[in-house]
Length: 102
Image (cartoon, rainbow, N blue to C red; front, side, top):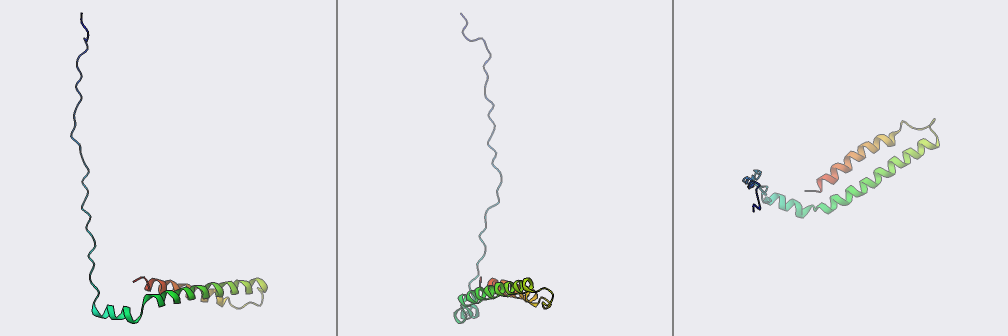
């Protein structure tokens, strides 16, 4: 009696191929110089943060008041100086907020 007449199938073994990943190199952090340390102690970044926040608030108020002035009377409105000033104030508070990140 023949129990198994089918040919024997052997699995094909392939080597595992792992992707080549470059090593992660940590950034080089240089210590602060003496002048940078003195600057940070004399002028902490919290002051810049508070001033940036206040300038952001003033920017919102300036633009809001100018839009209110335009909605009240467009004919006798000024040359929209509040919108122009709002652009300059926006650039100023963004740069001030960016300076307190360091």
